[in-house]
Length: 305
Image 1 (cartoon, rainbow, N blue to C red):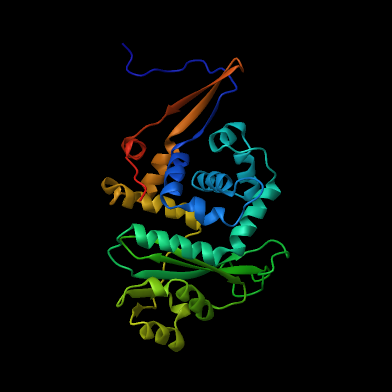
Image 2: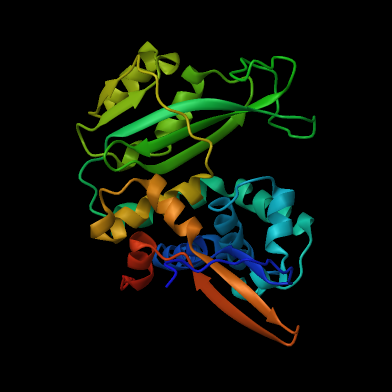
């Protein structure tokens, strides 16, 4: 008796397969973190912003390419069915992102409220780092010539400041976006003020030496916090909300607390659904590639407080 089933002849068909694990995770955490209210208040008319964002975050956790590619993936009938989306243009997706950008400070503050209320983090030590993104165009108002970490001084850029709760929590909690000609010492103040009020007395603030200045360290000491600098930090270009979702799985499900987010993301991406278009008359959804991690996530009894 053969131990493995083999396909000796491959016949083309119209069936479509795509990862489903990340879609499930996004749906659960989106509800638990109250993102429906956090984002919903910023767009009342037209296509539901929350349906678009759930699909976009799911894509970012799956492929994470351009907005054009995002729109192509989100426009597939099977994906629209899952998220309850009607047909929409790529321009609609850009307008949603513009809305988020225009209200980013309030949105980040609301997300921080939920995170610190729901999770009893063992500490509030933070890592902060700054980077830049090259712009291939001249339309972005924030685009300026400045110190290029990508060795492209001929291109305009924007600068990003990212903050996260330090090891072993490693959850992103802040993001600042500024013109490309702002230096790290100046950008530090904006990134730090975005979350300093949420840090416990005596917390450690860790940041790269490029942001070190007498004024900045004095600001930290005035808040009764400690600091460590002259240390290079690892950079991450993941979409902050997408990375947040993967990180929080370890706090929602105790059995996964010490599991690397790398393995969690891979497990969810491996879980797929195949849409079997039988004779183009009916659709049959076939799930496959279960493993211990994604099975635990699917079976977990998620609670909403």
